[in-house]
Amino acid sequence: MLLKELTERSPMRVFENSIHGGLGAGNLGVVVARHGMGKTAFLVDIALDDMMRGRKVLHVTIGRTIEHVREYYDEIFRDLVETTKLEDVGEVRREIESHRHIKAYLKDTFSIDHMRAHIAMLREMMGFVPVAVVMDGYDFSAATIEDLDELRGIAEGLKAEIWLAAHTHRTDPRDEHGIPEPVAHLASALAVIVHMAHDGKAVNLSVLKDHDNPDVSNLSLALDPTTMLLRQDG
Image (spheres, rainbow, N blue to C red):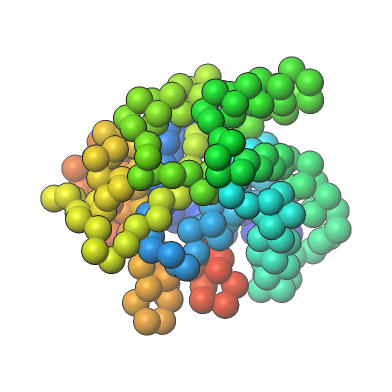
């Protein structure tokens, strides 16, 4: 399969359509799930899809090493190659990696100000301006509306979208829309909220918030239990 055909047929197109064309520049989106559901794999899937379409992506990881994050990308890319019979693998891999930058923070060293300064350095010194930022390890339990407003300001300045992951627990309370804490009280600052849950066979995705649309899509997508790549049911 050629790269162009792969991106056109990707289940990510179904996901984007389910949230009215995607997250959109200047917006924040979050995937919420309990531990071990594949939140980071989902973020990598989003990032790879952008990179395969020639778009620059910044991956911010908090509490993991750069090497650990690269292993995620390498493993998912290998699975993608095997399941799609992608052609020109070496060339494709070199091309997509040129569109990625990973920034790692220790848990006690991350700050939004530092992230903003790093993005400015990437722009000024390397000419690297991401159209998407994915963030794993962000502590929603300590976040405030003001913090998310700052992140949204970064997204607006870049004309980029920012995807985050939030860790939840079975006993976390939910609001009237089914959004669990620690995200529910921050929902006003988030454009899209996606939930991941295991049904015994696969990890299914459901949309809890879709911009300001009152009726959310009945999404029919799941993470493949073997490859952890998005697939479309049926």
